[in-house]
Amino acid sequence: MTTTTLGPRPSPLAPPKGSPPRNRAERLWKASPLTWVGLVLAVILSLFPFYWMIVIASRTNDAANSWPPPFLPGGKLGENIERVLANGDANILKGLMNSFLVSGTITVATVFFGSLAGFAFAKLRFKGKNALLLIILASMMVPIQLGVLPLYILMAKLEWLNTMPSVTVPFLIGGFGIFMMRQYAEQAVPNELIEAARVDGCSTWRVYWHVVAPALRPAAAVLGLLTFMEQWNQFFWPFVVLADPANPTVQISLRSLNSAYFADNSQIFAGTLIATLPLFIVFVLFGRQIIGGIMEGAVKS
Image (cartoon, rainbow, N blue to C red; front, side, top):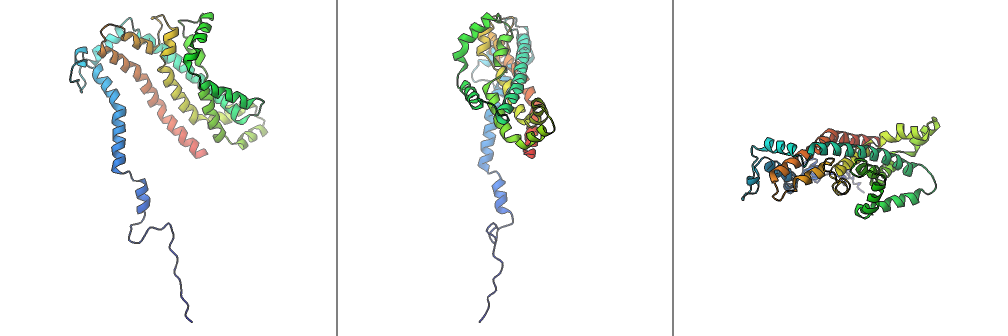
């Protein structure tokens, strides 16, 4: 009777014979040519509107309306920007300042109140919590156009028409911010951490400020950036309540550039370029903080 000795069984995850090591793993992470083509097309389609804005803003109005259209920037950018800044009907410098104050105030309030309410809905126990959360979710389904008339009447009774509080106070808190921070707090803040803070004698406010707020920083950064961009681009409600051309937001100022019978496209695009630069600066300044906060939150979790 002979005994057959069996060798070690090959691992099911081992690469087949004749293939170089890690060949399959490398193929999983290596981008195919089709992926590169798709990424390049996506970048071109995303950046072309900004490039086209610079091209038209640096040309004369005749060149902007010519056919075929120009595809290279001209030398009139500085002159067109000076014309926009000197346009008394647009008052774009005042619009930039007002939009910055309104967007900044709403962003800070939305992040603060949203994180505070999100912490309460995620980690605190109180009667009616689910019913209140459903009401907040329902408010997100109502478009702003349906509430324009009663909100306008309220602003008129408060004598806030043509003032910055009329475009600031109604948007200091929103359902989206509360729901977003509630969902993030549910996963990012362990209950054991809150209980440990309670044992150490922390009040609810100290638990929020020293435990919850640092953990919510990644979501707060994203919410702040989205809120600032949304309020900076807000046009409908400021157009309704700010009838005084001497006190506009930046979007109302851009609309004033297009009020002539013959549209000066070079001036309009130059004003659009001026209005876009603050958004670009905010994204550059806070983009790294957002990515860093997300990575830090991922490591903690």
